[in-house]
Amino acid sequence: MATVEGRARLSTLTEMRRHTDVRIGRNWLFLAIGSYVLWTTTAIIYLLGWLQQVPSYNIPLSVFGTLHFSATTWLLLLSFLASTGLSFLVYSLINRQNKHMTREEELFRESLERARSGTPQDRMSVLLPLSSAEQDFYRLVQKTHDRSAVLWALLVLIPYAGWVFLIISMYLVSQDLNFHEQTEQQLLQDISRVLAGGTHRQALPSSMTSGRTNSLAYALVSLVTLGVLSLFWLHRITIDQEAHFEQHAGFEPGLLQALLDFGSNLGSAL
Image (cartoon, one colour):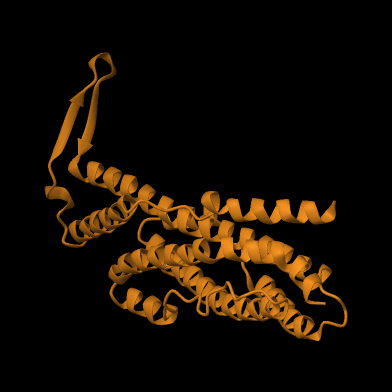
């Protein structure tokens, strides 16, 4: 019964990928660019003392009187509207990375438990890499951070200061992904040795890095350029996450089949 439940859980975790590793539309990045342009325009108008020269409009509201609107008011409204798009993009990037790492943690936990329960105590060719894989997994779990997507999305909405929070949030997301890929690669290498010790062909990739990003350099240059580079950084993180998800889509079916065959392969080899 436990074996059947374990197989079902592994299959479920693999199929959940379509719900956790979702794609983000590129249109949200255009709203981020629009937010930057609009808030920059507002700041320039204010610093140059052009606010009093901006035309105003009176909108008659019948018995309720007249509603006074200036072009600056419309500019601020458009800026806030574009900022909601930027805020949603930040929320989506953090939220899908949280979901991916949570699903992946459960997938590796179930995989290692299945390998441990199906390995005889005298099978050292499997137990040694399995022990190393478990250490990699524990390190991965300890260093995985569940960032608050809602909090960072709200902080990004703050005019001007929100761009500082944007740079901080992108630094954290980028650093988390860098560490995650590095540790995951070590874990997959050990799992490959576990499967090889169980007479199963290697079904896992030798590399799981989508291109390590120098997060500190991106953060510093983003600050120096007053947030201009952070727009490209948003695009880069989006691409890096999706490249990582594509790698998972490529090896998870093979990993699932290898683990389902693991016990029977060990038994036939004895």
